[in-house]
Length: 305
Ligand code: CP
Image (tube, rainbow, N blue to C red; front, side):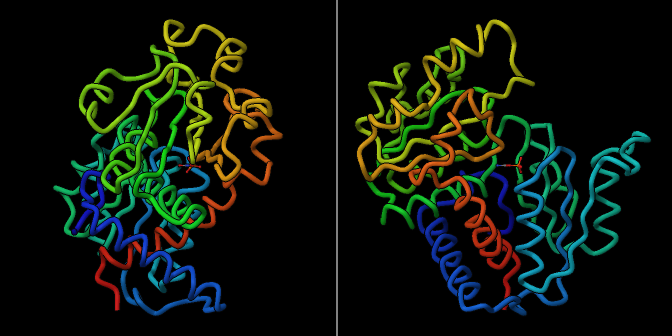
């Protein structure tokens, strides 16, 4: 494939190749090979119109470990504040010879538009409420490395599904790879299209306590209060009482089950601090795995040697 705009761009074979390549990248890093020459002479542009900690730093680290030249563009402090459009910004980057553009944007679909304007590969680093495919890949990588498989794995994705690009990409990728996915949350925060479009592959539940004992993985989502309307979200206390993962709920999970969160977390809202910091939590591991997975994506898209 040339671009990674959506988890739907990946069939099972391609997704597995990315996960296997990420494993090789991680093994090389473990042997203290600080830098690989695979993308020497190639340029990766990180084009971030929305805030990010993990994804932006992770893509930068990944590109640098592959010896690519990295240009970091943040909309803040750029000519975007003077009204310059995404298209004109893209054409400017194109003129500077970008081989890959990694884009985060508040508008769903921005990576698809960008791919029509630049010659290089486009990687979606999160677009609006639409998708975040490399997050889904690093989540799948983490599940596979902790639990040994994805096929048949029972994964509960919990909380603000409506606004979550992480949930959308995970549903697409995990079902492609044979996992049994259940989305859990209040009815107002589960989009009808997700439930309807994937009804044969996807379970929907409004009762977290019922789902936990039958889950191998529980993935808690950030409550996106900045995108919330009162009609969706009655109160933080009520939400936390019904859908927050606290210590008593953690005990309902099977002993082998893991707890995930893409970050950033609302500690005390969707996840209790004791749970986030428990040995069952893979939150920090997910961040570390993100670098290997993004190395694999850049390497494979750019035909690294
Ligand atoms: N998980 C994730 O996308 O985090 P950032 O917003 O910090 O990049």
